[in-house]
Length: 286
Ligand SMILES: [Zn+2]
Image 1: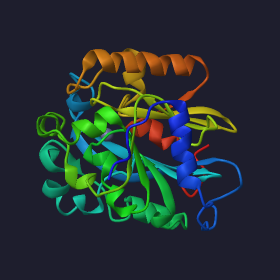
Image 2: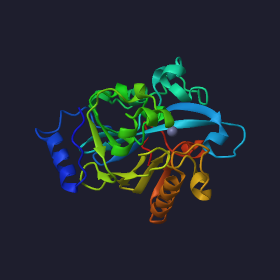
Image 3: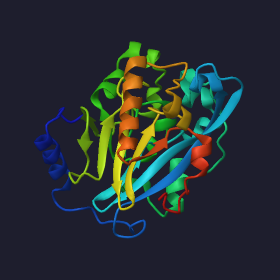
Image 4: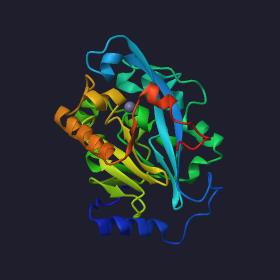
């Protein structure tokens, strides 16, 4: 059952206090080190017409499906969970209404459970899944992370339960409707109350898309997800052909530009070239 909606900072803190009452669960071996760390996990590959991702683009593109593990002293956090492992064999069921537009190019092992296994992390120990949005390539592994609280923008979660919006946004509830406790947030939300993991609303791609701002020892990183597919999306304000709300997506790109001007490094949503530059788990991403 979803928790009551909260938005004030105090309420957020109360939520966190409630979760941590009674102490932290016995922790599996920490992934690495005592501070916060970020790990990049490739949780699938897709192919589609470039036009889908960059309006007017020609030819096909093969692109990665990133997910991230954040190892915070107060618990493990996933930002997105990639493609469902069975989407390789049964795309029409798992990818759903977009199966004709997107070919699954994943191989066995390109899924969240396999990626976590290689880090010696039991998915049952992950405390939070922050979903950028509800599309199949960002929620496909949610069902394999059974004990996590899902943190999602209120507008996104609501859209995922309204049939007309499910259809308009090509959502496939088989990927996200697993009975997790859902923390619906409204705008920025500081997950641990220490400013290190903060959701930022970047609406436009979908009704309630969000990105994730991380304060790491080496500097600030923004995991943009589908607010910004590629580096050139940001450089040229080059939008995809299919956007839920163009004006809002442009506002979100302007916000990302501002964060970058202020020193943040932007991690693009599906940029193959950028992704090649990111060390993959079990290495730390930074
Ligand atoms: Zn995506």
